[in-house]
Length: 439
Image 1 (cartoon, rainbow, N blue to C red):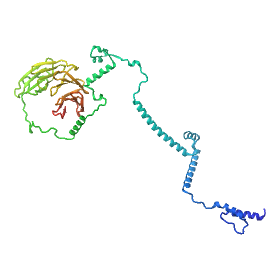
Image 2 (image 1 turned 60 degrees about the horizontal axis):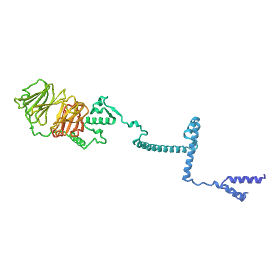
Image 3 (image 1 turned 60 degrees about the vertical axis):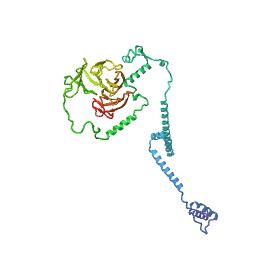
Image 4 (image 1 turned 135 degrees about the vertical axis):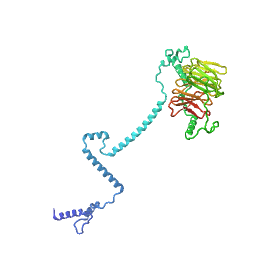
């Protein structure tokens, strides 16, 4: 190559290597070559400042590239078995971890949706189960009434009304057992009545009265008009049964409701009446009951009769004081007690209440001595009493529970526990009907 061409080529290359410089005048470069060199130097001009969006995209791309490089580094360290297990669980997500996160979010949403659907299905199942299911198949033998032999069972014999009922169907036997239960309970109990309300307005009122009673202290009884203030003077008089003393245990002592007469009875089989004057106390009359140790004797409400029961007998003796006649009541129809001991007479003289065994109380008519109805409590009866208006009966059990009964319906109106009671013995109601005393 000639020397001039070599030098010209070297100068052209030197001119192209220096951007932004023009060829010096007098150089051997042609205008076309200068234009080409200027065109090559245009990309080397200063760049404009990048926008915010492009900067964020560039930063995100750089972060993704670093994450990918770190993941590849960790993947190289993992054994082949672990990489295979991850691929089976998470799938092929080597290219993008965001796809894995998106997949996990979608699966979580499906789980929430499935749980909601399961709750709806459970509610539907509950509603469906509440409906009465009809039997798929009906056995014709079930429609035939099964006959029960009443004579072969000693418990079923007691509920037979006559000999023709030696065989009863199951439905009739169920009705008969239901009647016997209601008769024993004195009616249908509250817990057996469908939709019955346990609490009534009277219960609420009684609870309010009890709260008022327990929230104040002091004297609950007002000033007495019959007993003046000061010292009570007492004088020991002659014994009431001085004209007929006895060494036997005395079981009952009671004053006559309308006369100056006192009655004394004991286990010596005798009932004695004495005129009380405090000086001589003369004896009026003595009634002797053969082989009848008296457990309790009591005047009737009008004072015309004396009632007496024994310890080991179910006979009730009634002595008519006006006629002077002794009337034994051997059997009360419907009363299945083996012994008749404890009893109470209503203040109005209409009813006689007999306390039986196993928690039964039997209400009798005082006039006819016939059974009206029976009531039942839990446990044994310790004592019973009537209210002053003879509309309620208070029954005190040995475990300290008090039952309040309605005389007309023989249903339990209220029931409460005598707190602090170790063993119930006696009960009494005030004349105004506001207080009940338990002993």
